[in-house]
View 1 (spheres, rainbow, N blue to C red):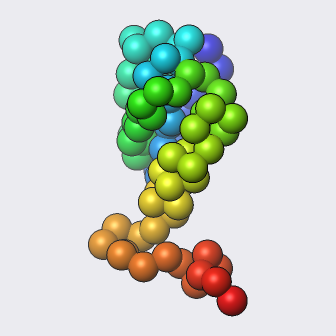
View 2: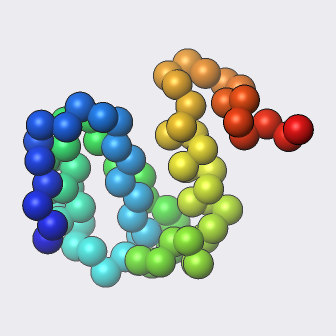
Length: 80
């Protein structure tokens, strides 16, 4: 397991698949070490979510990019 510092205050989204090889206890431990972390589990997904469930992964990442309460996509994501 990588070293994780509890000093970070940056928002962090940990994304795991429901069939991920990471153990649930390890996932929760990592989340507990990062004060601002939220954890998301993708259904029907293993450890390689970018290959196994890319559209759902993208939606989670884009949602994490939005400021709290923001309902529209940030300007840099809107079609030009």
